[in-house]
Length: 337
Ligand code: SAM
Ligand code: DTB
Ligand code: SF4
Image 1 (cartoon, rainbow, N blue to C red):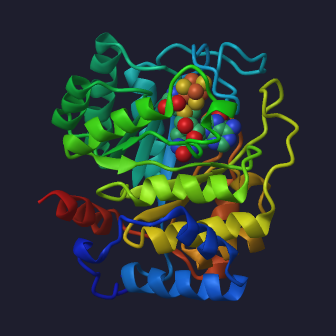
Image 2 (tube, helix red, strand yellow):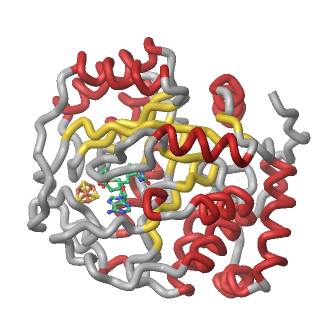
Image 3 (cartoon, rainbow, N blue to C red):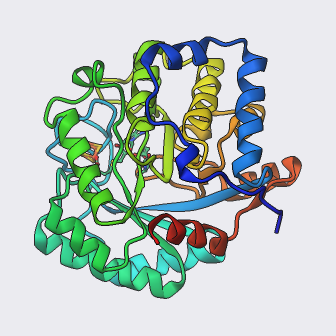
């Protein structure tokens, strides 16, 4: 495996970024911004490795929340097939396929505001089974209590995904049924229990550059950076309130990836939803700017992702290799030892 340069200790990381500093970063001449991001990227990560995760929607649709981007809200009139919680054997089957395709992490998502304790019993069975398949586990189930986070930790969960989605200032334009603070509270419970945090957001929802800076500030100024930072480009879904917006300019998107890399140098920055609409060249620029993780597999939760074969061809053209799971696990353990 490629040698990673010795990584700085967490004490070198900053958690006191001002909004003005981040806005200035986003406005730098493009080449200067990318050079800075890529230089840092090489100090902290293997330059030609990308971590790959697979997603599975374990419970689809009929969600009581009103997230303006989401196909799964019961409040929007979208064309999705609702599904109850999947049976365990189906989840195991999908995890085995993902592993044989080369994925190192299996992320299971449920369209809940929050899980009930009974729901959690079932999800915990899934986590144990996926671990037995030999994959890292991640779940995204909505808001969690402190006690529920402990149960997930005891089950051996590796990562919990809960996105901030956008800036605190723009948040009310997107979601009204839970607050920005609710999200921070869930992330705090997860962090307190020693589960790796996966948290990022969505770009292209009509927010401006200050909102993007503000969202990144929220993530970067957490006392400990999220280990994984998914940056999604809005997938516009017919029937959702955010359908038909202008989206985000590709250069602005790449700038945000570069800023995330600079602000959170140790984290894995995931080029998440939206890759299906991106050219190979756009994805290549995102990898150069510091993205080093993707969702791999034909489907995200309810929408299309890139064909796995197209990803393999792109990786080969770029000389990128999937990062090995051991490499990741060592990092995850090191964070909490
Ligand atoms: N229901 C749980 C929750 O909201 O926390 C878990 C699943 S939810 C679908 C996970 C994340 O996927 C959202 O927070 C959002 O950031 C992202 N997401 C959902 N729909 C999206 C879309 N249309 N485009 C981009 N990202 C999306
Ligand atoms: C994340 O940040 N993006 C993923 C995962 N975490 C759960 C979800 C993307 C969903 C895209 C729209 C869909 O497929 O429904
Ligand atoms: Fe429900 Fe999650 Fe979709 Fe919001 S993002 S509507 S909470 S499934």
